[in-house]
Length: 312
Image (tube, rainbow, N blue to C red; front, side):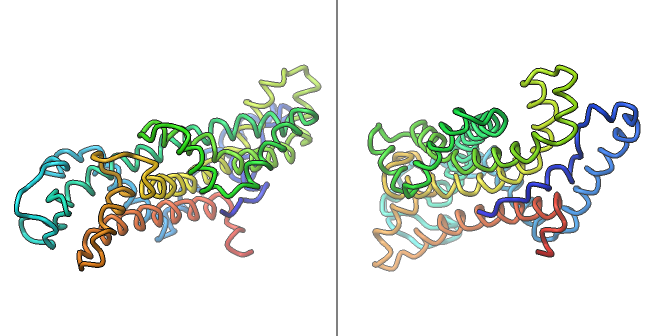
């Protein structure tokens, strides 16, 4: 996962310098102008806008899933075992005679919800620990960085499988496992941003007038790291959805009969050899389109915040 430049946040949002009080009016006018430029550059990125439209549609599908699905995703229909797509069953049925359309649609809600909730945990832990390590340094920095080194030294999928196997697989377990094992990259990124910013003149000026550490962190450093955090959050949404699908596919995530894209895909692969191609194609396509859309938006946001990234 690409990590944005340390200059990205400052260029996108602008410094919060206590010494610029006399220029407050010009800074107030400049900030909205920078935000407008970011939005304009994002709107000019066609791939990012396509990804954004797809994401909005996916979340609308998740919100209205019970009505769009049209039937209970766990409803059994005798005589319709492994039937191909048709006018009655748009995506066909599975080995248990359940409608695949309903399962994929309802699975959209579960997969997106798990991804979003896991990212909230990832970003909360990563931003908090990264900010503390970058600002205070010393023993705090050593503890946080050694912990991240341990997490990064172990392949993430192995760490996820081990953690998921220790607890009863469920929706809540999947969210917590992904969240508490995936924050290390975000912590390192935020730490690097705080290290590069904490010795800037406006931070030194804030210290000189007696501003407490928490005020400096939240009033001056965090806003100048926000652009990087936004990009990282977008990219991590796609990663979290993919991790949830992987755990559910392995039977360690969302448990049947609740449908998620991962366990629907796992159900279908058993019948793939018999020619039931639709059972793996449609849930796999849903995962592919969603992950691709989030990555397109994340790349577009990175380029919008830092247009120089395209030239590197």
